[in-house]
Image 1 (cartoon, rainbow, N blue to C red):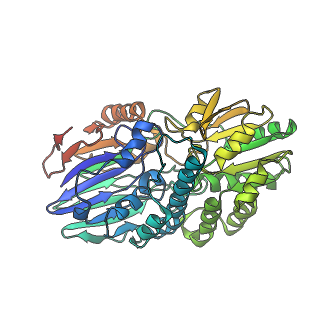
Image 2 (image 1 turned 30 degrees about the vertical axis):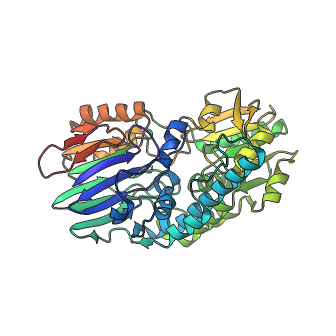
Image 3 (image 1 turned 45 degrees about the vertical axis):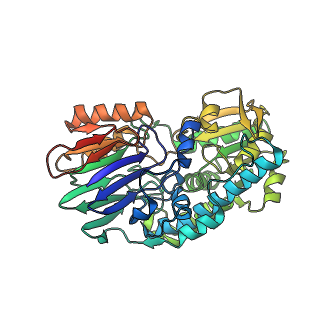
Length: 462
């Protein structure tokens, strides 16, 4: 096999790994680049092979940095199968349609208000492109090994992180490649711990938090403190949140805090039709998470679901204390940016920013203390209190990644550290080398390597 790193190499976004086995081409993950403009421009790059030669796509999970490029491939002619767990397939029916719709809306908004440098501004793909992509989904259950192309088998195992997330194991010509996808935390309140994997010839391991540990503080204590403090000054707590995983974790903690009367009785709004639909999936896939029936019911009803654009606009006129959870998680688009325009300039409000914020996103700028952020062509001042919150992450931290790696009974022939900012990837690379003694490296964008039965992989480009 040959493998080419077409994303999430030297960066935390755009996951795509191309496998070539004889005349077959398989893509593991199919993610959008997000964050810095120079990365986002890669979304418009032509892939280094004809789309017609691609035989299959395998997705680790539904987050757009792992799945959101799929409609582009389909628009450009891909018609093969897309393999993922059943929960991931159901999530994609929500996320991809929303992504296509949002891109159309943002292009239309930019054209109407004239702030785009492109004339006319065009979406990367449309809702119709996403609908065509969904027809290619082929759900496969965890631990069910199947042949995806001649001579290559696939098996998925639970990765924690979010509903449906999986690690990928591909075997061809006696060579085993494992891709961690995004690893969850062993003690996540919602999701089960990532399954242990005992052997692989080659390993791709994510490094989102490869250079740090999550704080020891309890998320419910921090949430209670922030919401109470903000309510006492009659402000609103605005939480940019991923619609999948983080929004549900927030609502679970808020449900528990309300049950124990540890936060004021202020209204909680979930302003994301997508997150609303995702939340109901936790009831459908009860066996795939830790929540009891009562906890799942409580999480699903602690917030008022805001579906219509009109109701979303009305929230910006809210003048009494409240909590508003709105997509997107890094404030790159969606309804949260309209709330930022309305709420960020007022110092009585709080911007509670949970989880990792990729470089170049508005969320990263806000956490870094930017005095203003650019929204719809205008600078919006940030006068609200900014409160980063790392204790809600659904990613394993550095120690937890190392704990997962120690589950291997023998070292892989080589380990590639991917899906991390440069420092995070390099720090994790050093730890793997020093603490485990493994052969390990950080690949660069478009590097290509040969995965052979010999002891050392060869770098064929880059």
